[in-house]
Image (tube, rainbow, N blue to C red):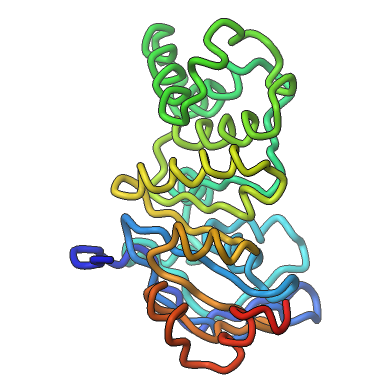
Length: 257
């Protein structure tokens, strides 16, 4: 797998995080490459999701959260006091483990964020964005006659693709995915994976997954977390075939997890 030409999109340096007295991440440092898929693996409770949510400051919503270290997005520290957190979250979108469509129409699920960014957008332009976003996740043909139906009427796999379309509609640079396929059937999972492959030249994807097969299939780079520490990180083929750390090897062969 040729990684030449990838630039560094996010640099994390000495990142430690706490929820109250609980230290959930310890001195994590890594460079995340642009226009690539970075997979994050490790047993439950190892800090993967906390790390992911640190990259767009969603952890700020927890009153007891605090951190040390730096997170640079295109060279700019996202935790400096003057940072526009709303803008960070526009640039770094997120798809959650459980599909979370809003309890409104399919059309409005996509349109809502666009309207917030562009309050004066013309109806015709908004329609184009909604249609294009649905086409990009191969959902248009399935919902084109039911755009005013509740998004909650969709199947789980359709809902997750709708959530991805909702993120794509506001044109982020980075997309975080936290176990996006954990509640999906194999067919829906394959569709999500195909979308990641198709658009990785356009976006930077960071995917938390417990599915080692999925991590091997989709990621260009792979990080292994254990007990709040980043134990190993590198090109996926190197981590999988020749892990440097015994803990990584044990996890990959299923000795624990």
